[in-house]
Length: 196
Image (cartoon, rainbow, N blue to C red; front, side, top):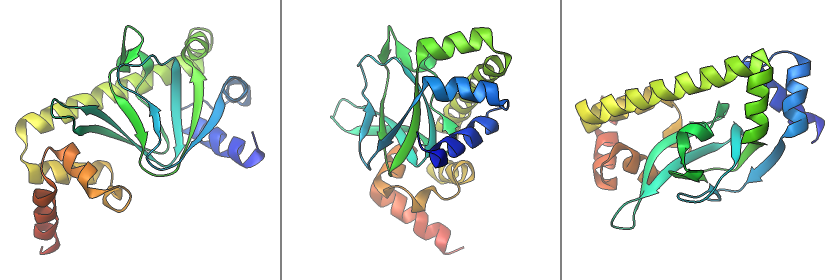
């Protein structure tokens, strides 16, 4: 791992509360950096996956395939962020969604067993695991409430607050999918906002 990448990873770990050099080194020594080109699949729905991920460059989305064979986006990850923890994104060791890069991306990948061991033996990692899980639960609840109670316009407002620059980063059909509307409806919404 080059010094520049190590420094970026250390900075990301600091944001997660892993501040001591000792604890950061534990992660760096046990992880690998993966680079993904745009549209590359990181892992697939219904396939075995045994890693945890920290995204520190780029944008990812998670999606599922519906009964019509269409990809339905269910969430975004924009650096610096931990991808949904393994325990929350797998059933019987198999992923419940597909994760794909929407831009070029750099990800730190660490085996689940290793990170679990760190969580049980290191206070900084214990707090990190708890914080990531709490953030994920909060995010899931917010999205669930939004999709059950808000119209498409309000869902777009919420998306823009969560990810201010997302419309400049990812294809609009993917945002429309996330909002649960057609591309045409999304274009109309954007035009409506542009007039105000």
